Image (cartoon, rainbow, N blue to C red; front, side, top):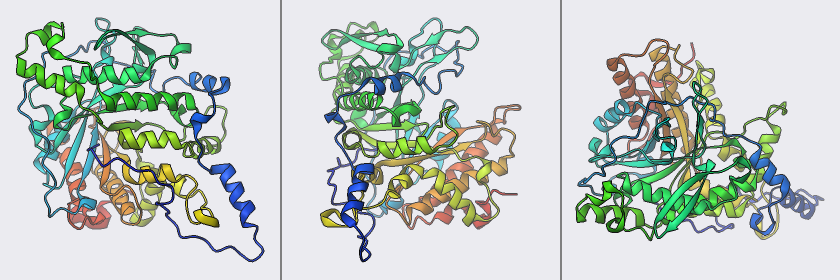
Length: 509
């Protein structure tokens, strides 16, 4: 999420395991040839996209398409802000980078309690990327989800200089369950260019969603980010929310993702706020217009991709075997992962462990949580290594593993709600501490995720909403767990458990 040095993908530089000696009589050459055939990287662009791949991409509806939306919600004030902003300060020299918190926060609403708690407990070594949710669709403005939510004044920076805002590009659309009306997401539209930096969007038929310019979608979104108050020149970035589970099964969607992130990183180099005829822009001062123009034109702006499903089983699939194989095959796609390395700073997988992962024994609980939270990385790590020759000891999916070692961002549940409303506050606080402990402890013994972690925050709202005071206490507990495990110093995982020690992280009865 923070800008990092672009990766130089070198397949021979990132071996995880040492070379394995061959047994006497073992046919090493044929074994390596079989491994190459099953898992070796390939240039997916060298093979034309086929009819079957296109059908696969079109056959999977957006995973969240049936979610209700707030039909009464309308965009906030569209007057761009005139903030006095600066980039987040560099980490102090005394910080241990490996344990200096790099946090991404996602919430569909109700951000103030967790932002207040994080701000009050912020440490000089910590940095916070706050994902600003889109505006819900409405009958009055059906395409409102295609615009970022307006940022006024300092926005999230009011909580501290270490905070930055991330604008949400929502992949798919949503239905209003009450009216049946469909509100489009970016998947459902094409961008029509009317002139220099002038565009409009048009809803397309399902069969045409991949037959349009996805790069241009990213360019237009960057322009809209700038006009809605996001300032990449001071650190703000973008995130793509809720890719469909089919992303591991079809190159058609992977190609769309690659083009989209390339456009988001490139920005709109033609945009000039002084020539914008939007009344909200025309009325601004020259200095304010200059800031908007700069924001739209920032180059090489790397952002966050949220993956909501890693191995979603299809209705006709009795096990997850086919989904896991699709993920393994996706790890072979060298061009896909190279583009993620060039344009995406954080590959954030939503891994929300529920109370079913709780245990009385912290060690056993941690093992279960790590298998779930770190599943994407572990699938790649467990693919066998080459046994002989110049590539002995290397992974056949080295490009993906190299990127994930630097950019994988596990997002854990800090949600009291989201199907866990019936649990007690103390139980959910233990669950959160346990997930933070498991993530930090995994980093101590593996190449990833280092200091990266994300949270999905939601307070209790059903059947009886939590009071503001209780919500504040819950948010503070989450902030304390994060600051304890990622303190910028020794980064001891047990710090997530607080003064209660290991038992405070074990959430079993």
